[in-house]
Length: 315
Image 1 (cartoon, rainbow, N blue to C red):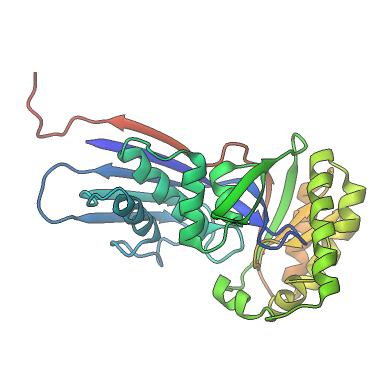
Image 2: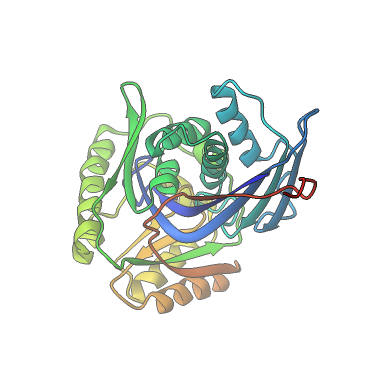
């Protein structure tokens, strides 16, 4: 039997003005272990889930990890083998921290490993982005670090961007369930030209500020006009939490992805900033979980091992 173990980081997309294009990988991980079982017959898929989503995620072939694996096998013109899939999830669902992209990336990487690693990392990213429908979280999950992504002339493209060493963030996740489709539905179909132009310039400067650890610049430019004004009203207590983070020393605060999580940037005092956000949400009647996290620099990591079947003949 062959067992593949895949670790995929969380990711925070948008980073203020970088709507659907910037993402930062965070050291909070989902781990997937896939064993290709011996024997023929009809395909059998067994899925075990522990951690985040253990009571919600499907444990059959409709699981997102399995569906991603099926897409890889279909592109290779092969049938999915009998599988035992174990999910150990630390990334909360519907949080704005890239749990969906992590599942897709894990399934794509696991299937690619079982098939002999025909796809390089860029191909893994493109298929993950295709499955997700947008590239930002997919790029963070696959490449790690700070990434920029978009749809190019022939498909999705992404690249790692320079990033200051030892960058840490504080994250607060209020107990508010908002799905990405819900939050996308809150966005207008058209935006003013001036808002689009402002976001382009600010997104470029956010990337430069993160490369230089220039927190003064980050405070100036991590301001969005395209999505946050339409999404934050659906998150109780968010304005108070943003104000509390800034008062505690955060240079910049952004909605993480489509929310409801907030991500904050500061040169120090990350724990105090996290606790300030938690307390602000609590005063607004909303419980919140908080993390202080470094940036993940590796992206998706795959390890594989060969195991002798318990029914194999001894030499």
